[in-house]
Length: 64
Image 1 (cartoon, one colour):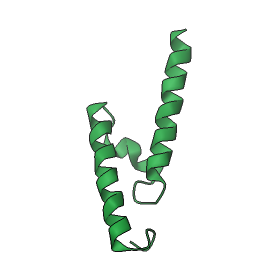
Image 2: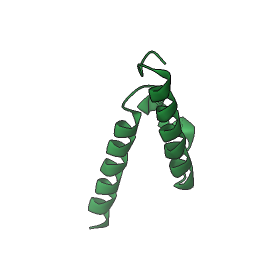
Image 3: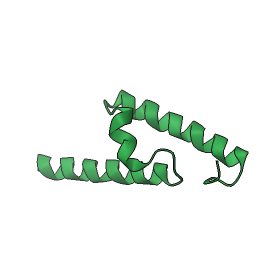
Image 4: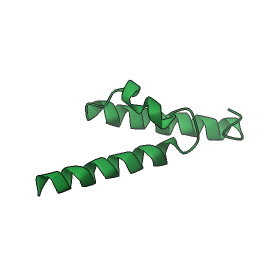
């Protein structure tokens, strides 16, 4: 919790993280695959979004 400053921020982060894990699971991405993105640290959402944008971009280039 120290990384987040207060209990409210930590709780909000955990809710957002849970949504990311659910969306990832629906896309076939396991929690273990998200481990390198440091899911317990601030900035997790941004790191995951960036990775998915890069994957989508690469997939688009591969399809061309």
